[in-house]
Image 1 (cartoon, helix red, strand yellow):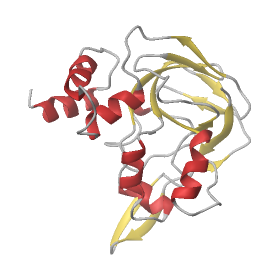
Image 2 (spheres, helix red, strand yellow; image 1 turned 90 degrees about the horizontal axis):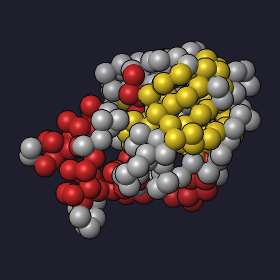
Image 3 (tube, helix red, strand yellow; image 1 turned 60 degrees about the vertical axis):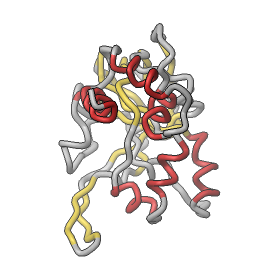
Image 4 (tube, helix red, strand yellow; image 1 turned 90 degrees about the vertical axis):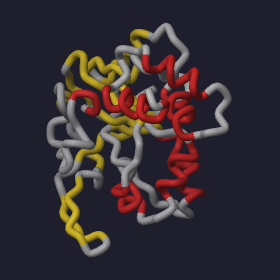
Length: 214
């Protein structure tokens, strides 16, 4: 795996459904190295700090390999790196093989997998497609959110390596699919197992408990 594109954004204000919306989802590539700190990537802004950024969502990565699917699904060949709001577009980042709690080195920073991404309406704005949230949820390849264990610097072209694998089998894709796909075999046991993982973000612990009425 390696960084194909490093993407950041400033907060932008737009009108959506007659209301003013502030968002940092419109990320664009930068050729400069970026500093990864505990709560965010320096130079990247989040407008909604309740749902974006923070310790468990300090860094968001998305696989370059998914872009071909989305070009076809959205009938848009011009999807540029960062369009999904990711800080890092990474080659061969496979959510099925990335597990909650895995330690991953991106540049000189050491990150820990904390949760899948649940898309909000701002993704539909960025992709200019009202069906994209449904498509995103049904595709089950969500990208990966990380918390920062060791701060560092990363830039386009840097290697991305798994330094420590979790000992369980709850991958990012498995967790997301078990939560959203009612036909997923044994989804309740998957969700209960996920609750036992101390590395799982609090947000997802709450979501699972609510879903299972625990």
